[in-house]
Length: 124
Image (cartoon, rainbow, N blue to C red; front, side, top):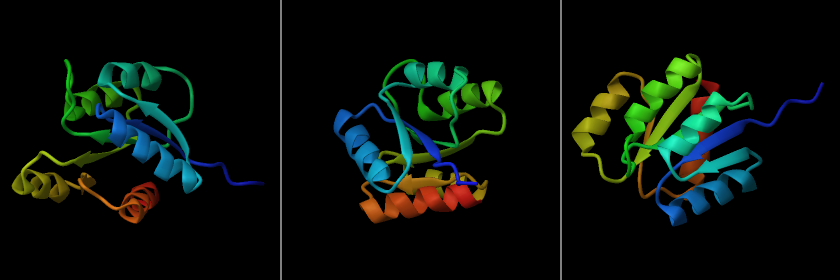
């Protein structure tokens, strides 16, 4: 039986960053669903399509930041894995998040770092 390709929902409100994340992950064999807002991503989560992991920016413009999006998403899909990326959160905050087992990748990242980060999160 063939192994299913993991599906990643990518949530980032920066169009260029979202495009790069989508390209990098797709080039490494992942199915990618890009979303430029927490509201749009929440609608995707509420659907019935497969999502193996969510890569979400912590700082999002709009009514929901990344953490609020994650909390609402977990109400819909309690076991869904959500990992974060951020370039604006202070290092002590990121260290605190990591100490709770939350996966956080600081921006800017190199493509190989992003892919390795996602693979680690999928296997944990």
